[in-house]
Amino acid sequence: MAVTGYLSEFSLAEIFSFLEQGNKTGLLTICVLSEDQSKKRENHYVWFNQGRIVAASNRLDQHGLANMIGQRGWLGEHTALRVAQTCAATMPIGLILKTQGLLTVEQLKLLFYAQVMRQVCALFSLKDGWFQFDGKVPLPFAEMTGLNAPATEVTLSALRVLKDWSALASKLPEPSSAIKGIIEGKPQQKLNQSEWHLWEFANGTLALHTIAKQLQLPLEKAQQIAFRLVTAGLVEEVPLVTVSSVASRPEATGPEIAVPETVPAEATAVSHSFLHNLVGFLKGKV
Image (cartoon, rainbow, N blue to C red; front, top):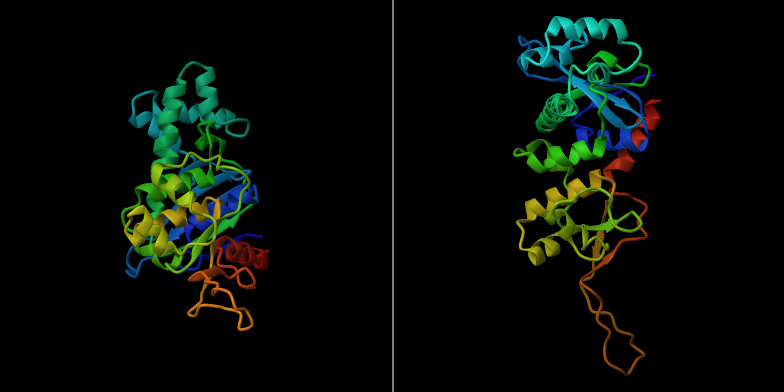
């Protein structure tokens, strides 16, 4: 059964995180919604294999990769299509062309970057859209270079270069919340400097606005970095409870014991992890 929803409910970053953690295989369709009814709906397709992105396109005829090869002059598009048609159901066309000496490894890397990284990263700026994930759709070997990337790696790359965050504004961690690491040891992902700095504060005891001040970052920037770490499955948002008074024991004669300004709300039954919400939503759709 296909799973459907809207990007206003769950962001593309959250969907990618779920698909990777669930080792999902299938096709994610994203339909761009527009208020202008006269415009033709624009669809985008992203194929997953065990949680890793293997191909992307804005068409379903499986001519997209062959067209890209032809546009670069590396091989005639018709030649690439003939190869695709003869072996489309056996293995990725990119690997076949490499085996035949028609494409190099470097050319396949460039194709994968243009096909997946560039096209998919552009989707993160969508303000609204409809999505559907169908786990029964077969892999599109004629659209595959043979390369792949973890969904969260693509997400991190996309969010690092995202300029317009308005579509994700409601998804950002609250300034009064903390972030807490949920993995053992250090992250395996390649984090940039600002992400590492924020990761070092992921102990669940400091509010995000306090962390931003200590790192001399604009609050919004700190929220965006924290969101990247959340969607990468490295941290979770932890609500903090403000304590307005200084606690002391009436019976004690010694000095008063100061209570921190904020303490982690560990006892709360409500999770602020967007991924948890997504998992619950998708389970309810199955």
